[in-house]
Image 1 (tube, one colour):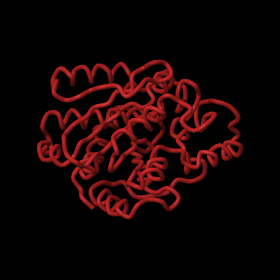
Image 2: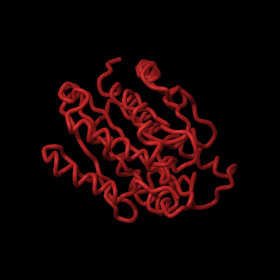
Image 3: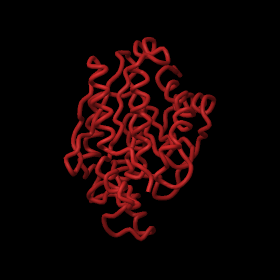
Length: 270
């Protein structure tokens, strides 16, 4: 089993970040089923409001290290941070599903939260279709993956993200996952026109290419809910290839190829 970027590691790095940058807000937007904090960071003061988040799925813990590393770099003033911060306000929630990480790091192939609900199937975006698709996949109860919950937003982690999104009126969101090196950008034809402008830029600066999910993965995700609800650009960025959890030694290369895309999300104006 690979070493995990787990909740303890994230908490340690956040505490170090707070000590180094006391002026940058670090706070919790809620708690998981097992009462772990869902930590957030806010950087900048610009009018464009951008939201990055990782680890909807327990085995995808590299997607927490990615926004955390980006926050540290911006805090240290890299990438012309002053200009970026005047243009945008960036909100980061590195680890949406800390309980799932704790289960997965023991070696279980676990994507869901502590109650066996797949959080990225628990949003109110054609949720009923995800529920119907469970039958085709042989899913009859809570478990490691793809169980959509008893009803939309049944889980505290999902509710916390929904409430946080409504409170902050984001203009753009990136949800990081870790299979495929692709960008999911639409939801049933409802993506706004500016999504295509972002998509063109993201493909120019990164190796990630546009794609469309299939089957049960087509419904109930955060990106789906965001696009449907706010009619603003939302993207799922799949950062890796291989078997989850991806090894930590893959991270430097993943960060290098994803960094330009993250910077474009902050500074590009469609």
